[in-house]
Amino acid sequence: MNNVSYTMEGKTALVTIDRPKALNALNPETLAELLQLFSELAENDELVGVILTGAGEKAFVAGADISAMQHYDALAGREFGKLGHRVMSVIEQFPKPVIAAVNGFALGGGCELALACDIRICSENAKFGQPEVNLGVIPGFGGTQRLPRLVGKGHGFELLFTGDMIDAQEACRIGLVNRVVALEQLLPECLGIMEKIAQKGPVAIALCKEVVRAGMEMDSDRACQYEADLFGVCFASDDQKEGMKAFLEKRVPQFTGK
Ligand code: DAK
Image (cartoon, rainbow, N blue to C red; front, top):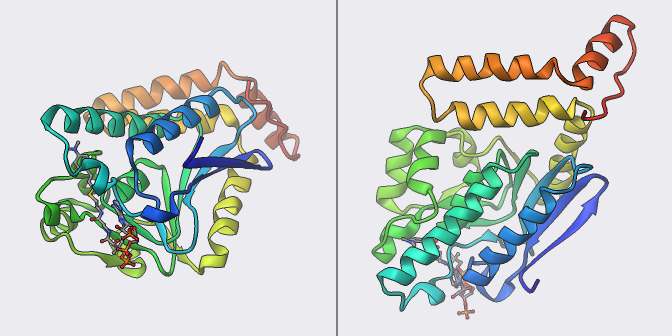
C-alpha cells in the first residue's frame, strides 16, 4: 500500500494515513487501501480494536482530494462517493471498536472519516469543519447524516452552512470529540482506552457496537427489542458464564471471546 500503513501496538492496530504532500487527503487510491486494510483487519480474531490517525503533526485528513475531484463528471463523482461510503461503512460496521486519533486538520472527508469511527479523541491543534460549500458541493461521505446525528441539527447545520473551521475545544464543547489532549498524549490516550476495552468480554464489546450502530437507525421500541435479543445472545457465550462466575468468586475474569 502506498498511502496507508499499520503497526500492531499489542493487540491494537494503529492505522496511519500518510500522504504528506496533500495533508493526507483522500484520493481514490487511499480510499481503496483503507477499504482493503479494514477488510483484512476484520478477519483478525485476536484484534482488540483499531486506532486511526494521520501521519505528521499537521493533519488527520484535510478532506477528499480536491485535485482528484476537480474534473469529475457526474458518473465519476458518483463512483467516488460510493467508494467513500463503502469505506465509512466498513469502519462503522467493523466488528471491533475504532478510535479516531485526530492529530490536526479533519476537514470535509477527513471530518466524515472521524465521524464514522466509534470514538474521537483529538490533540490541541486539531481543527474540524465541513468546508464543502466553499467548493460548491455538499459533503459526499455521510457528513450530512452523521454530523447532525452526533452534535444535533443546530450545530450540524451551522458547520454545514458556513463551512467554518472550529478548534479542538469547540469540537469538544459540541460533542464532536470526547476529549482534547496534548499532541504527544494523543496516541497514549487512545491506547489507554483500548487497554481498558481489552480487559472486557470481547463478545459483549462486539454486541454493544452492533446494537448501538443498528439501534440508532431504528425507532426506540424496535431498538430496545433488538437490545433484548442481543442481551439474550450474550447468554450463549462462554464470556457471560466466566464474567458472572468470576464476579461471584471475587476474581478477575479470564475472557476468551467465545
Ligand atoms: N485535497 C488536495 N490537496 C490538498 C487538500 C485537499 N483536500 N488539502 C490540502 N492540500 C494540499 C494543498 O494543495 C497543498 O499542496 P501544494 O500546494 O503544496 O502542492 C498542501 O496540501 C499543503 O496545503 P496548504 O499549503 O494549503 O497548507 P496550509 O497550512 O496553508 O492550509 C488547510 C491548510 C487544510 C487549511 C488548506 O490546505 C485547506 O483549506 N485545504 C482544503 C480543505 C478542504 O476544503 N477540505 C475539504 C475538501 S472537499 C462527494 C465526495 C466527497 C466529498 C464531496 C462530495 N461526492 C461524491 C458527491 C468531499 C469533499 C471534501 O472533502
